[in-house]
Amino acid sequence: MSDSSKRVSYNPDVFEVTTIDEAKRIVLTAEDATTEDRWRVETPYLADGIGAYLEPDASSLIIDYGCGIGRMAKELIARHGCSVVGVDISTSMRQLAPGYVGNARFAACSWNVVDAQIDHGLQVDGVIAIWSLQHSPKVDEDIARIARMLKPGGGLYVCNLVRAAVPTNQGWVDTGFAIQTLLAEAFEEVAIEPLSAEHTSDGIASVAFIGKYRKRPD
Image 1 (cartoon, one colour):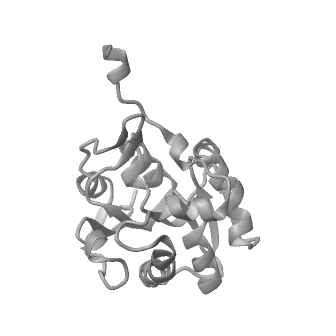
Image 2 (cartoon, one colour; image 1 turned 45 degrees about the vertical axis):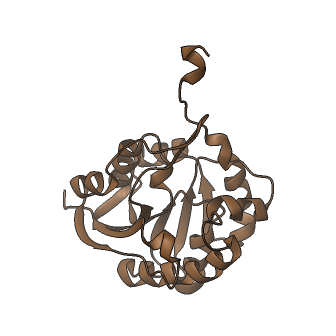
């Protein structure tokens, strides 16, 4: 085998899907609970935590960073009437998301569109990143983008694996980045909390965390 065939390269194609059901299985893998069970139990649990921390209302603009098909956006809009912009690397997830969310207060776009909006002055009230930063090959750039788009004092709510799981041509790879350290350097750390095993599973709760952060004043 040549050295070139052994090189590890990022493979975002794993996030490309054709149906809502296929998307759900990618967004919430079946780990030690089924995708449907995780979707049903975990979604309202995380929405409770996000709502209590960010306190969104009808005037709030929230970024769902790594939105998938808009699982959390749909729940937050239904509960709080806020507006949500979903950002995702997957073209097919972005195409499916508006139909899944089914609300005019939601829109989905790519990273480059958000970067252009930031360059034109976009600032948002809050950001959520649910099971997304762990999959990034350039997580420092993602964190910097989130910091740029947040208003001073704006909140960031993260649910993430402790370690990276980046999709590559050789499977899921731990790239070694210390996500909690990087987040604490970029934001004021408000709280680090464990996930409830009752609302996820013992296996998932043991390898993940919830982080609450706030953008420091300029």
